[in-house]
Picture 1: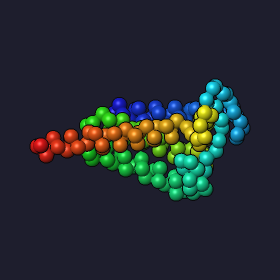
Picture 2: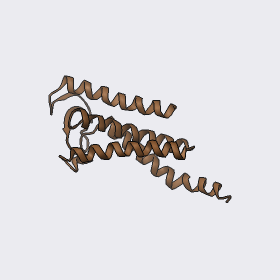
Picture 3: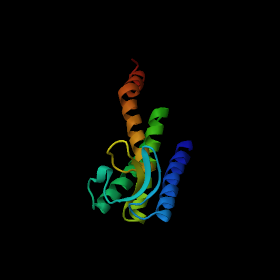
Length: 154
């Protein structure tokens, strides 16, 4: 239950900050800037790095399908690992946050621009997906084998 609450809170924080950005800036406008970082309103009609730009229906379907698969996996497998639970929570909340944008706005609101390197503008949902994916890789590489070995009696 705590994982569901965490996922909802992350998605809500993502949506709240996006609302603040959209309410206070024009597309392309920088709201604030600190060394190395700008808060800048950008509309993204694609996925990461603007790939599949203009494929709104497809990307929305993928986001929703991913959320459904995570819920089904959670119910059927009942993951015990804190790392796996956190990874699923982060990826679910990020997919949900961006799906809400695609459904409600027809694009994803991005607003975090790092200025010390050439990198696409991103948002809280993107950070959650990336962190969750990294945690999933760590789990699979370093911990999943140990748990499978324990289940097999090794």
